[in-house]
Length: 329
Image (tube, rainbow, N blue to C red; front, top):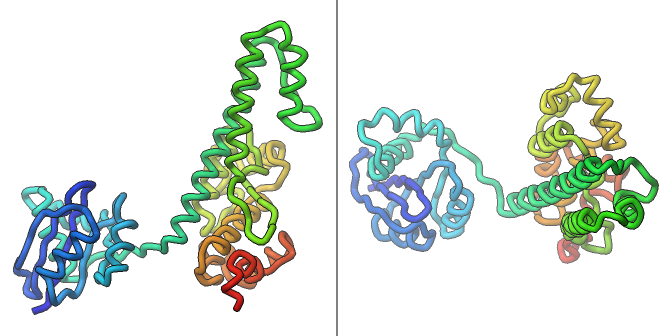
């Protein structure tokens, strides 16, 4: 008789419930949240397995990939939809939730959530980490400006960049204030570390390193919020109106402030962010170019190809081949 299984996953233990095609519970147990343990238990207690279901959650990506690699027919269900059904049950326990999820898995009345590949999540993690470092660097720069302003030292704008101007201030205007000199020098050292870590990922094939977020160098929190919103929604159409709403500014004011702070128009900045995300996806994984084009907001591979030729002088496939030399043979 065919079996359907539900996993109610928590950090340490997972409640497992097995039902047959009539909905009768044939086995249930709490076991360690370990793919090997779960796979072994299912092989003993659910031999004619049709489907295993679990809700979306912090461990869903890891557990789904591990169980899928072990040949388990695992599916991921939308937690909000599952909660709407489970809240009708009188007693909310891990055991009861697993039993309710098992019935949902058996009937198929759930919203299927697609789990992306490990490569995709690795690229996303890399971009998120770099974004944190960029924001840290910008906050350090703003903190230095604010501290100096308190003592009547205006940072201003100078040719040569932020670091050169800071060295001039430390050597000149702060020469009489030893404590402030130490503070500024310490913050500048932290800034150097953050900036170096942002571009730590080296391109294959001698390609130049590129960080669109680093080049944008937004100063205000509102523009940074708009860039963060754009980074998280590259797959969607990103109009000036939408970005202005994220920045809590009018479209006209947002366009002006954005250009003053970054030196680019919003449209050009979004294209650079998409180019960076697509390039990383090509170098880090082997997903189809068409899929990457849709995920990064280019829509189709031809549009992405033209953008790559304008920006890098190479096609997406050429960049992938340079990153994975054996893939071209």
